[in-house]
Amino acid sequence: MKKKNSTVQLVKHKKKNYLKDKKIKKIYKIFKNILFKHIKYESFCVGVSGGPDSLALAYLSKIYSKEFKTKYRVLIVNHRLRKESAKEAKEVKSILLKERILSKILKWKGETPKSNIQSNARQIRHGLLLKECYSLKIKNLILGHQMNDFIESFLIRLFRGSGLKGLTSFNQVSFLNKNNQKIIRPLITIKKKDLIYISKKIFGKYILDPTNFNEKYLRTRIRNHINNFKSDGLDINKIKLTIKNLQIAEDSLDYYFQKSIQKYVRQINQNKWLISNKILDQESKEIIFRATGYVISKVGNTYYSPRGKNLQNLIEKMRNTKPLKVTLGKCIIERVKNSFIISNEFKI
Image (cartoon, rainbow, N blue to C red; front, side, top):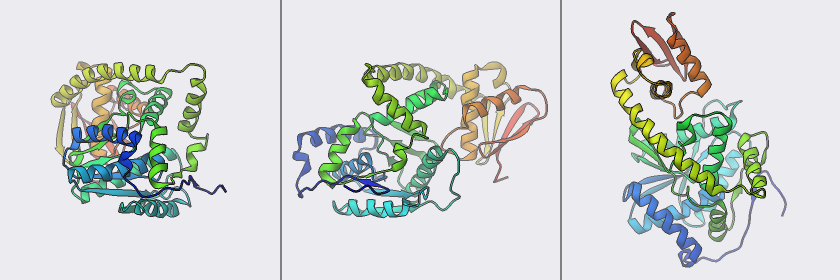
């Protein structure tokens, strides 16, 4: 097989009822139980990239939609980060059509990021997908992250010195306060090799993003290290147990975080919030960190909070008694008497 910019795996197959396949039927049952738990009969959007995970997700979503008589929309993002992006998006659309799955291509029209490309690409994808969900009046976004992604994300955040929240934030469901939306990852307990099996069996092909093999990206290096360490006895189940134990601690901290928001934070309007400086003396460092990051992400209308180091530097400046007026996360943070006013820098 000749290699192209996007690597395509080809397998011939005939049209048939794939749920007769015991392996696919077992995976669909897991998928169905998770999805029904979180959305039941509600409409949902599905983010598809063309990789084996997302193509498997598209098929499983189609079956779920038929079984429960729910509406679903399949969305493909052309992030324009590579010259092949537009062509690949059209190819994915064509692959889906072979199984009578209709889809829509969303095109990024903003400035192409030059740094932190993978992180920015995720924000672009999530932003476009959530915006389209909102325009369709659909609150549920389904993504194809699987078990390998779960482990990789944990280790990446460990490398970057993330706190407890960051280490445990790659959950089955993420609730977004904005527009009451939520992101659901119903494949997070499924192994990648099983999703590759579904994709080959049903679609006969899938697209591999060449950046997934580029070792200049931390995720690629982490993935390769995991594969190497498996031969040295790395037990993925022990990593999963560690994450589960950390999640228990995270749930306890989240309880106190929520109480601190009620006590020290006030929303003035959509683009301006207030944090009382009493939080600096009366709460722990972790709660201050979370509350400040939460407010900035809400006001700045960003999916993620600012990076940990930047946020810690801001909190140190907040502790100082000197006048304060800085920008972070698309926000202006300013000391006003006994409080801090956080305003959206583009909507003042």
